[in-house]
Length: 469
Ligand SMILES: Nc1ncnc2c1ncn2[C@@H]1O[C@H](COP(=O)(O)OP(=O)(O)OP(=O)(O)O)[C@@H](O)[C@H]1O
Ligand SMILES: [Mg+2]
Image (tube, rainbow, N blue to C red; front, top):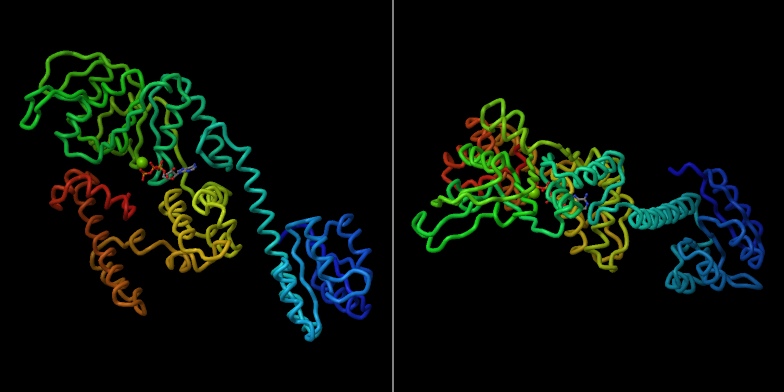
């Protein structure tokens, strides 16, 4: 509820009708003003700036239709409800076409009136909020693309700006989908190296030997298939920034080589002898707890300190007060392409209550999907995926620990069509299987992937999909 009472202007040439409305709406807590003279109403519209206009259609002097038009000239976002006798129901429909929000028969019941007024006022609030957020959008940020106005994110942005100016290596921490790569790019773009290359390396995506030659390059004949020599990404990033994504997945042998390269500021290609000088700034990202990995001897401590000169920690989306709505509107603008202009307020409430296990990426996907499905000018509840309406993340994102308990979970699919149920069982089982395997291998993706007989890239994708960290 808004702190200020909503103001309603009531216009009807019949004094009884005016009294009736005044009584009902006054008792419901609205701040009401009324007149039996439609011309006086025009003045009140300008001087009082009401939140809602409730008007009769047939009035001497100035008819309701004309009042409606003028009212919307004064305030295009003003909702108008027309009151009409049954005999003139057609003109009521015409009024709605002209932009009236709703109409009521003269014989309205107390509840009918209250519901109509309530709904119109909520719609106005929504429009005003959409407008306010749009304006807010324009002010935020010297950092392009990075959206957020919550105090935690404002602090992150300040840190990003400061850290970017320095030459320090930066470690970006955060759950999947919190924007680590976006931050890494912002750091580069705001750094003195901005005119040089930004080179992303996904440490989780390649098997060890390929990753090595990807990072450091190789000489012709270094291994079968090395038909010509090729510079590595560290070389490509010379004088620029290398972005080591998911650095926690870097195999230990490569950690050692990377550490040496950073200490000596030079690299040697696979199969080569020459020392090649490289000047790179390293920005890394991880969704894992690197300190833990250090403790378990899965991550080299010296490398940890070398890449973690400044740590930037991205909070989970649900911990960024207000940003869900702000981001939702940014994505709506992007995917709605002017065709879809807002969210129904029950949609925004669902957004507020949801936990967003997939963080900003999940929000983005949901808005994109909703825009594709929407057939009205706003996103409605039914444009959201079912699991959001149920108020909890999909089975996959919260799958229980063991395979047996995943099977026991089958009861939660009762009532679903077989195909959908089957899909959920598969996901629950797959996720439980992967979690179990990960635990057995102390969280080591390479080892777990090997045991599962799939490559690290695929394994990592599944880990991300099921939010297993
Ligand atoms: N603050 C933000 N403002 C606008 N868009 C954002 C923001 N944070 C993330 N996004 C968007 O969300 C998506 C996910 O961001 P990004 O890829 O940077 O996350 P990530 O932390 O690297 O995720 P993962 O760990 O899964 O790789 C991207 O499309 C990105 O543009
Ligand atoms: Mg990423």
